[in-house]
Length: 466
Image (tube, rainbow, N blue to C red; front, top):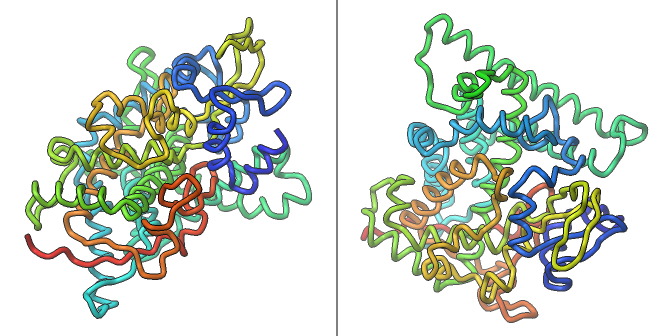
């Protein structure tokens, strides 16, 4: 377990969990009372029920109030999912799609067109950092939907809310590693983080108060966004509504969990497309054969008409699960048997999502980026466990798909993408197993590029009319 904590502190858990699956297989021990499982059937068994409760480590992520992510209570999880769930139904997301498009793909295209006009490369190209732009736009989407306010992180480089989220993520990570973040000397560092988070909480509380006051005075019509859905939501059984602090807490979870994961999946998608030119060309050809150059592709249109682009996104989710760390659960009283091994009650059982997404019994040639596997087997989408599974499945997964489909499809339609000549990772550079070598990754709650400023530069050009 000490080695795991060291890897966590160094940001190496993402690569470790994947590599450990290839080295040790379906089940292996990492401590006296701690094991890791990677077999997809075992993973679903653990995640599919509240019997395997969350480890107490999750309570380190309760910043304001208990949330769907931090709580160990099955009852609270059940109640909160009934309250939060309606905000992420396809019907509600369709009503929010104008905001998703405006703050997402439209914002990126405006920024990329600005860079093209500004840089004026000799061949009409410009260099952009796609990882940074994806992160900014996903923050813009969630902050607009969750707080009813536009920060314009991508347009104006306004990092205020991004800094709040980064500080929140860092403090929660430190709580996992250190027993008391308020103790000297670590308190010298965490004091500023706590002050920043207090500002974040006050901002969230004020957003809820302001919305309620505007509605009470009849100053606005009810907006179609996540904030309003949370204000209106109630448990259909108990009729209990969420308090202000609960709304703020869940919105913080949406920002922390929903921005990084979506932005990083988009980042890995573009990275793999650049490493696999055949896949890139096939995806571009599909988009440009189905939609006119000046048409803005919506989620429903992409879902219905772009099966290969959707397969590319699912393959990126599979091959580089941004939630790639091992998710800790606790074996219930009476014990349980996995892969022929009996685990007594109280054993910590860590769910290896990256291992499950690479499992040889489920995926042929799992380290090869091959989207066709999702065309050949329609059920394969349901085998990807990047959004978790069962009673703890990510409630915001539908929103993530709206963002990813509209961004990837429209970028492939409107721009030609290529790697700059000085790129360190290119199709011809192979790893020890003969696959294109991928950029190194780092793990801080989510798995992203270790050196994004260096490795996520890309050449863009406006696509010729077709």
